Length: 339
Image (cartoon, rainbow, N blue to C red):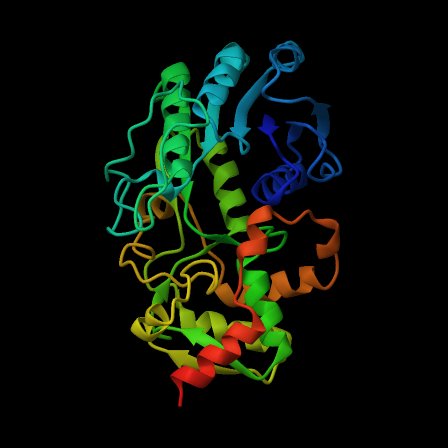
């Protein structure tokens, strides 16, 4: 199998390229060479997807069975690239997100749920952010999907919509923050109900399903999340304590108390969000097509191992600076809420 990966050096793209190379596939990556190094065994073409000259050079270089776009965020950008590569591949797989749904994170979701309206030629300014609903990121990813479908049609387009993706090389820093905090020990502010169901997907399982989609010529949208009832927030905390061999003591504080204290969901308390639809994304269609999710304990363990071996070599996203509550603020909240 011959594939072209747009991106291919960061978190999701790196996992896809690694697995494809391990399977003996012929893999070419196209990126600027700024984020990280390419996986050994993959051929690299350096260039910027926003440069027409670079895209024309890429299109003239070869043909592929499939193109996997892991670096598309602006609809007009994706539209231009897709049009240039339309005759060079059979299938275009776009890595999207559950944020394209108009009802996320409030409503339970399936692939039939309504998506945000965004034209396929929208620029980076399209859309807006709201605290409990659509985001500019979601609008633009939806526009990217529209661009892909416009050029390749329904039959030749695959849209993967992962929810929360965790695992080794995570640069947003959600799971790494919890692991570091647990490794420090002491009383740890734990958010909400420990029995709250969560359904993050391991990046390696997302990569495996990506390649499976290409192998089996799958078309259309697929939510890529762990199944309902997969694990709990309490389980996540326990796995972190186990992986770090910590003596940390989680102190579970109800949602309403944390909200009253002004604790920011999703950022100060990574992966904690009270909206009912956050962890109610059906991936039944992907599971029927072969998605298999490893235990969360394994994801947590392997992420901790990575953090203690090669993590410093990976660039950290600007978003990571917003992740996690400070020790001082955590202590003040614990003192005020549990007394």
